[in-house]
Image 1 (cartoon, rainbow, N blue to C red):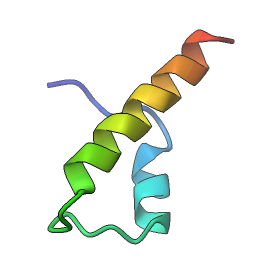
Image 2: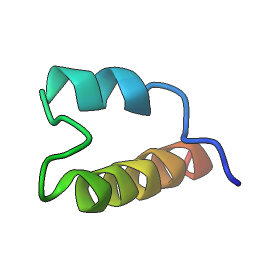
Image 3: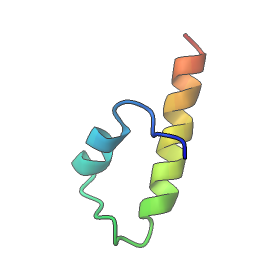
Image 4: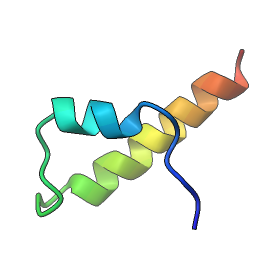
Length: 42
């Protein structure tokens, strides 16, 4: 199992998306991809 990029848990909590929210997994996947791309572009 891959760990989420650093900071994603904090951002998810700031978005106030509970794990039971309809779009939680989709937002988490997109956020993790975005953070990974940012890290890769440095």
